[in-house]
Length: 156
Image (tube, helix red, strand yellow):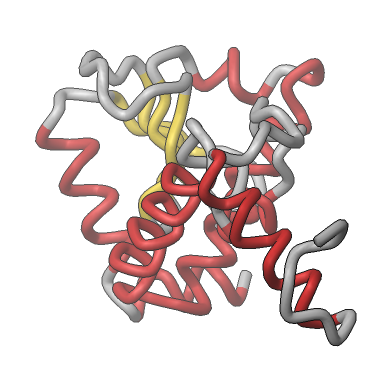
């Protein structure tokens, strides 16, 4: 598979393998050219799994992740593999900037994060929307006013 080859060439799968091996997980073959590192024992990051290159690291078993009722979660993580294939090592700083942006706008690192939205928020068990922080609401109101040709907020 092309994305598996790209993540091997760009080194992100090697990093995923080092994380998996360094944390004592057991590697198993998954579908679509990915590896699953099962029984990850650390609490970070939050959630049941995360992806590094073509390695999906989960705190559960490979069977749990590959079960039919979690097909959407597996697909979400596979979309991250595609992102790693495209961005290579630039995925990490770009992802963290996107996390910061999302947290700045909301209370979640995922809801306004382009990478998580592109991978499918619902499939990754993220809420689809959260309220914006007050400063972001004010900023967006000002931007809407400028688009309408107004310089003052509506009603003034």
